[in-house]
Image 1 (spheres, rainbow, N blue to C red):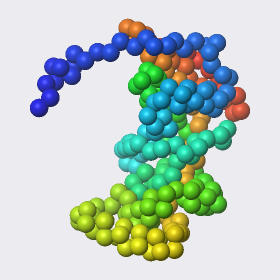
Image 2 (cartoon, rainbow, N blue to C red):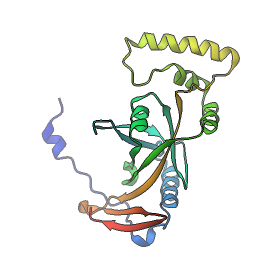
Image 3 (cartoon, rainbow, N blue to C red):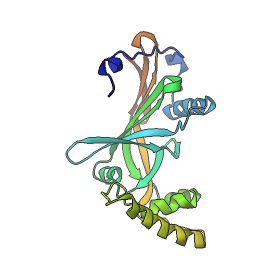
Image 4 (cartoon, rainbow, N blue to C red):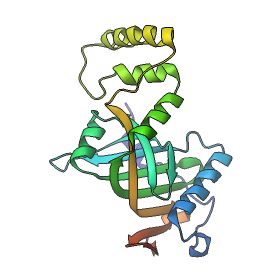
Length: 216
């Protein structure tokens, strides 16, 4: 069993970089692109991995990791099973929060906003770009539903895979597609020594992004 005293004494001093107001692009999407490109250049593993936090009808939040599959000045896109826990919660309550964390760079990005489905055309296009085995798995997995055992899932997959392999095609199921997160808030965080981190928020005011420094 892990010694809780050891956990409480774990410390890492941050100090790889600084973040000043003059460093920031006035457009948070361009700032996101700048940091994301730097993360790729720094060989961060899966820098497009992000936590998505949703809430249910009782206000209970839940979070999980997904992969961002694109972004522009409208928002950030990820794909999922619409019948999954996150998909169902987004349909009930469109407000979500995202989090990127890159330990190697001592950086994180928080994003808040509202979520909506992307077009069927966009979902179709991305689905076709995925490996055929991933397409087959997405079609048969009853994501977030209790299942009896793994064999049941593997049997469903093997049956779908045989059909997909024969015709080299899987039709995108209606329950699978993309979500677009439209941000109204960004926060860029850079770790600094003595926990005096640099934090800047972008808050959308109609069509203008207001930028402020936050205390760590």
